[in-house]
Length: 162
Image (tube, rainbow, N blue to C red):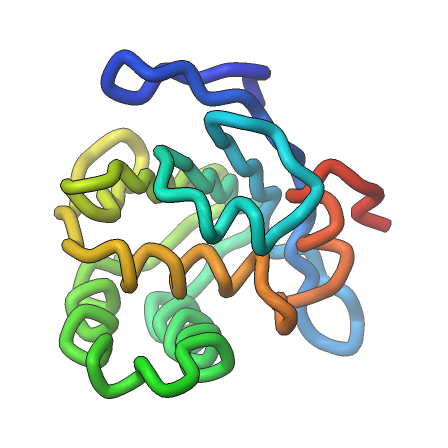
């Protein structure tokens, strides 16, 4: 992944990269890259900053739509706390944006304050979901205390992903 990206005239830097492993056999699903305005090894600091950020998922295997939707819903359940009901309609909106995914596909989730979280698949916009609250919980899936796997979170925060 490139070291820098431009989002609406703002330069974001690659904070780190990690690999999503699934199942007891540690099957690689995607390589993730996190871009932020200001590098940090502190996930909470990144979540608390109302700044532009981008998560890029590069699929290294096929993923069925329902598998991705289930993983996202589970991530919101684990990270939304008391906000779950307030976010429910927007989680459903995100679920509707998910396509069948094939090896090599790239999903990009870009948060812009005042606009929301824009979802792109292979460079095509799927839509934007409003709300700082939604984006914060979305990024908490990877940066919060209960990531899909610990190495993924560590890598995104600039540490070892192994």
